[in-house]
Length: 108
Length: 121
Image 1: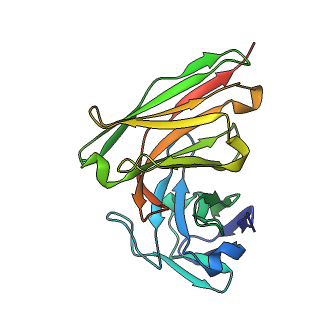
Image 2: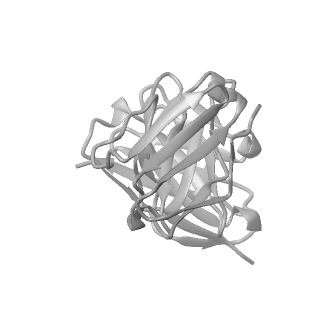
């Protein structure tokens, strides 16, 4: 398959937990990476590989996967977490990358 | 610090070509690849392809095969993305990203600031 599927939007109350999912056949083979993007800005890597947070990313961000689904969890969402989140992984050929359609996270 | 600095925005006519540059600094250029991603107005991210700066091997998105060429100049630590036969739906912000090279493309941990390309007659 050459697609990664994300829910278009999700909302979370301030301080609560939200999970964003990404589904695709290639996720059975390859890990997902997760990016946060705010309007007018470049993407920022928040989770890579199995569950690695780059320097500077708060530990309230975590990643997991099961079968064909990868998840990004924000535990204790903050106002500054409001953004679009994209998953990304290789396709089943292993040669190319795919992006999910993105999930807009609103913090209420 | 790692920096990727892209060339400035341009306006192009349909049918013409555009070449966007991405100057890297703050790390050993040939230890990482370069990915290119674009974002049309109001749309999501679209992966365009990547180049291994070590081997010069490229892989492109199938939707762009034949129109896109990615190259690097290791002497100036600069990557280039050329897109030909421009159409109005190529109007987008184009980003370069430093990509971990696992023999195939990995995650991008640093990004350029983006280059706006507008295709209009």
